[in-house]
Amino acid sequence: MTALPVTLASVMAVLTVWVIHNLRGWPRPSRSGSGHALPHVSILVPARDEEHNIVRCLESLLRQEYPSFEVICLDDGSKDRTPQLLAELQLRYPKLRVLEGADLPEGWVGKCFACHRLSEAADGRWLLFTDADTVHDPDMLAAHLRTALAREAGLLTGFPRVISRHALGWLTLPMLFFVIALHLPLRRVEGARDPRFTAAHGAFMLYRRDVYDRIGGHAAFRGALVEDMEMARAVKAAGEALVLCDITERTGCEMYRHPAQIWDGFAKNLFPGLGRSTPLLAGLLLFYTLFYIAPLPAAAVLLPLGERPAALAFLAVFLLGALQKAAVDRHFRVPGPWFLLVPASFTVLVLLAVRSWFLAFRGRDYVWKGRRYTP
Image (tube, rainbow, N blue to C red; front, top):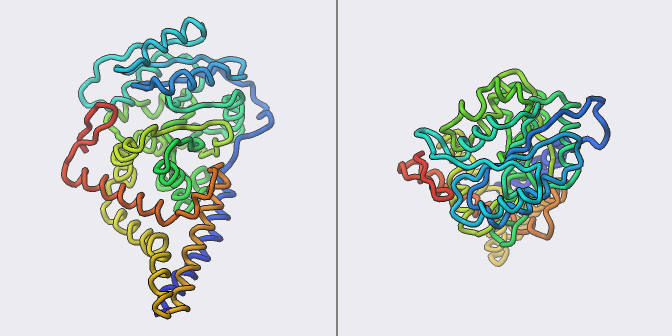
């Protein structure tokens, strides 16, 4: 009875060392000058039905302490008060340019088309694509440009600090950090050209303009549901450096304001983000169940049955998983004791992954912000 839990505990001990070591390979922005002159930057923001976020986002971008930049926002057919709020912001901030959305052409995903049009209007030597639900510290742009220049990046990307007003958000969104720290050798993201070692977040994509043009821009990925990952792989394939940076100190994101949005957002991104590989998904679900979901319930069942050694071994597996999550949460500024709920976090993640797979397998459309996309 004790062989399985002891084996799991031994593997988890190794994984705990790995996760803590791997976090050291996640670079943070430079606090000193790069020795390069800071170039002109275009900050590009697609917005669709963002009345709750757009003012906070754009004001934080327009207040950047940076010598030369422009901010361009495209209203992508919003049905809420976003257009009115943009008009008010333009009166207060002459630096802000606003573009009106156009009908979505055949074969395009909405965000890709919006970003494509923004890129056509931009004149910066660097392009920062960032989402309308983000908020930024005043030194964000300077810190990340210095880092990109110092590391000779073609693309600098990062996962923003989690902002959430509901429990489901805190259970799921910090898992993005954890899953990457668990599975991806972070030093290989920047150090290897192999596209398998790739991670990116569409809420923060800082491209050197010539690299963006060389990979074809968003036009080359017009039908991609997970365009951030595909474009990041293309940057690597072009021989340019991809830098996955810890941006949580200066950039936050309230990705899903309402719990229901999590089900739609993850359904759109999870299975496509795994390369639509059913065997890979099945292997991950088995791994997560064995190591993160089942151990605590198993300990609770076995202890009253008198199987104390096995129960304690399963408890050790749970505690090591919680320790891993605590290390990642602390690194990325996730507040509170959510790491203690790591079995619940993985359970929700598994359910989201199965739903994403089911929609793709059945050919059901993904729905996001009023638009339907066929898998």
